[in-house]
Image (cartoon, rainbow, N blue to C red; front, side, top):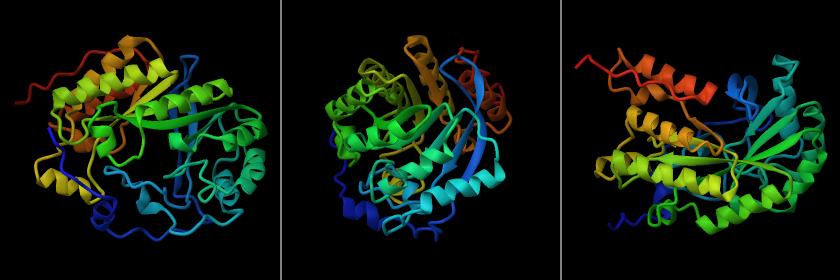
Length: 312
């Protein structure tokens, strides 16, 4: 199959307008439970930082909506973290600094701010950041060395499908991903990996197959944790692809089947992303119980039965 040609310019032209953002305020923050490496459901603080947009333009991404067009001002990131501290005075043992871009892009997160950020993170046992595999370099070590706890870097592999990965415009190969994981593990960093479920051009069943293949590749490379993200619209391009018949979101059952397959590997923790999960519900009566099953599997890393829908 030949996927429809699509350029960076076309992806950007299809975008709706960006939101207006303040570089001195985070996009938000939230506390949630996550199964730790020790197998316990523990609180995690996620801070959604405001910073410069990612320099890559992926077909599927909508994170650019709340980013800056210009470089992030020096001092802005620590100020955003300090603003969250006013609402959450005592931080849990795990903090995620998610920034809708790349943590080790110096135009997004100024290197000069690493020290102030590390001071705010004193006492935190695990700090999780997200980054493009091609930006895995000595800046990672510089930040790691300032932390009192463990650094974990989340990388987007997305898929190992040999045609879809280059078509996604992520400017990444599987080999580059593997090299980034090896580098991080060799430099005392933990790794988690993002996997897409059902990117454009494939069926629900094929989506499961390639997500499982991608999970296997991530764990084989050395990732200790994976998060499966169901493909959704929201950036203009995905809506166009859906109208043209190239894309349909995965079913909730496909997300469950992928989760089950990942947990059966027993190679590391496997999570599924439940953000806006209601958009995948086939049945409003059964969707809540099916989502609850996925949430239980996230928290326990144990397989639970699928609540079948008998409404139709």
